[in-house]
Figure 1 (cartoon, rainbow, N blue to C red):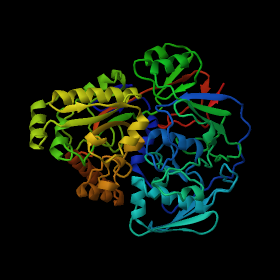
Figure 2: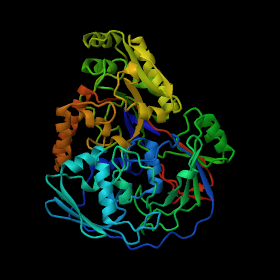
Figure 3: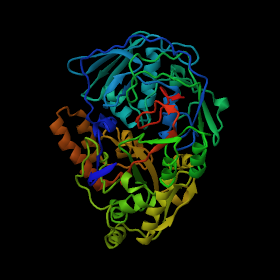
Figure 4: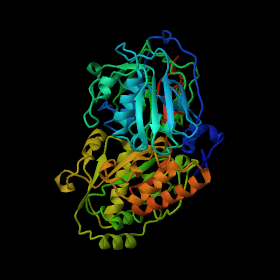
Length: 546
């Protein structure tokens, strides 16, 4: 990769590599009916085992209750989606066979494909889809927005349901293809009826793999087996859409938090795939003739510094603004060990650099520190030297490195830093605590997001500023919320771009979170593995072990 302009990726065939980012354009196929030919169940596959190491270990299995990436990854194994994004960022039918939309875009009808069945043998019904949408809509930012615009959602028969809107919502199909945050997966109605604030324990889905909780050992491995009853779509795989044909018997998701151990295991053939090897081991892997590397997420990741808006000092916007004069994106990238070729220098865009919705409106700071300005703002905010609790996911090398770099800079600016180390699973639990930091709460944490997490004002869940209804951090700003809603209700592209810049500028004023750096990483895999594609999130259908 080469960087031709600050913050913009320039690659041969860039359109092909960043197609998933084009989902930000979100053009709906209103008034269209699409159908795929019925498909038979999956043909027998070699009884081979694919062993993979993903960014984090699996510690929870409810993709509605938890927004952690490892739960989303689990979801793509065992569940299926009503719609899915292809490599051009278009929402394509997945479990849906056909759909229609009224000319005014306020009424939709959806019909499910033939032959869909859950892992327990029960058929997938429209009632399952409706129950799943309703549970998801209670937790996810996109789901809430869709629910707020919905007048009714009704089951017509076992295969058909309708959605009637009470006001314009231009992104219905894209909402039903939600692939991250709380991704929208279809569960059996009996499971989907679980209250949205209670974790499910039944992993029954209708996806291409099955999962048994009795085989799951957190901290060791999760095992997924090919679902022989799954009926793939007839189309070729394309992004997260198309035919999901499983070509191995088993996938073992191994917990291997030490990057050097994982790299050695890959070189020795003990494992087959590492989603995100740390930058320092990539050169060694590249020298091994039995190992290949690829940009699984070609647009890249952003380091998001999440602030607790309900606790001092960052309940005061001046204290949040102070961080813009403390954090240096270049220091963060260098501290994580990201190679210059994979760095996206000086990227203040909330909707990622190198995407159709990249905007720098209102951006300030995040370059050379101005500690005097930062200290002035902290004094004005009333900061009195109290401890600032910065949760550190020490088992995640990139999270750990970026946290330590930023904590050190904050300490030098005069903040009294407390940086407790814990695993990422514990961070995802503790960040939900509302107590004061000294009583077990927190002030800051880092999460590493991909382009599907932050691609536009609707889907970017950490941009949501709805107070108690927002994800952990709980920012509240009515002006930002009004601008976000105006964006997803506006159908004119030129007007929508104006609103987008206003969203970006307002976000820099109130700072729901801080985009602390953007970078790419390379995934690594054994040379006998075929079928991996740049799908941004790790999926293992259509993957072969030769």
